[in-house]
Image (cartoon, rainbow, N blue to C red; front, side, top):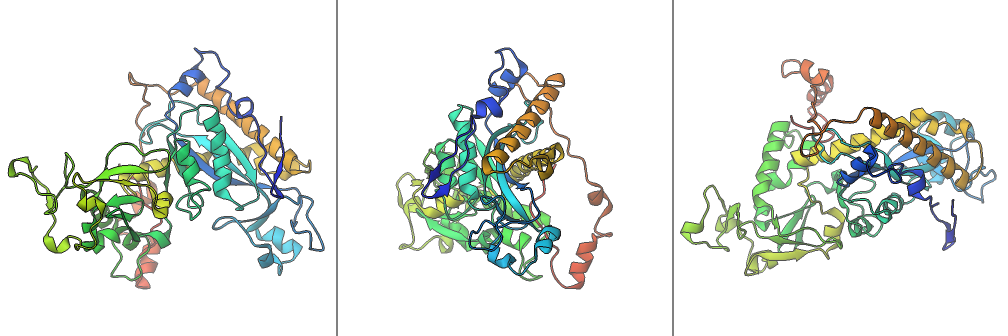
Length: 458
């Protein structure tokens, strides 16, 4: 059953019953292995968009053009950025050039939500299937499309936990498209920060919002800690560039200044925090939060008076009697907040593992004929959506059958075996005495070597 509707003159998403199409484990007997795996899933998911080519070498969705594509509800897809392509920028390209360049393709974008492992450091104890799907024009509204796919899972009563997405979904200005609806359904977004947002601070309820986490305002006196990720990923000069060990050292030094959560995050995104010098397990020794000498734990980091905020700059985090503060209404908090410390080892394991899960699933679908428009020449938005969903459902059944025949062994606590992360050959071959080729070129140009993102440490 497929429903197609129009709202405000635009084309809505098609809605398929996910129970019948994408969830083969929901109708299995109680003692079936798939039912057991469904009950043991914590709710981690990864969301990503994958391009679906339309049949034909070129096209356009604009009626004012001389030639219009046979799929008017499709659009141009670009390989970089948000995948959205302005057709005016393609006007100078010929029809053949549009098809041959490979950078620009005409079709749709399917946003898939894939079940991911409960513990990124362990093997999954259930088949990693597609649980939700939405269909839209490439790059038109990735946040709304992802929310539609997540809504299918929420309405089926499946557990919700972390949701991982790339930069097209996370820390976007329109929080009502993705972040707010996802949190209302019980998801906790975890994403990567854009280069333009690294090192930016926002004063919030007396604290400092830095890269998705709330810190004590005294961290403003430590510019090296604030700009740690900026200096590692995107240094502006050779003097700013730092190596991986120094980067990890600075990220770990940030932990002392973290405002400590006082309870779980609410569905509206708000959360209570406690001053790191006023909690039961303090990490800072602050003059604004005096303690009895017998109650002072050892190894506290002292905050000197010169590093304290001024009398007029102190907010609720510093002035409230108990050090408690509720954060949630500020737009920056709704846009950036994360439950895990950004760029930490836990973030690296969680983000990279779940991102690899969705990319691996996309690759499986491509090999199943998902990207071959010659195998689905039926015209129309609804027809393409139905055929794509059928391919994905068939892939789900194949993965579920393979998992039933060879399930992952679990321990007494229902956990899978720990992952063994083998050393990559390039990390073994390239040492300080034998640097990587791009490091040699960077040194010759007096620039820092490029670093894309944090690597997982074993």
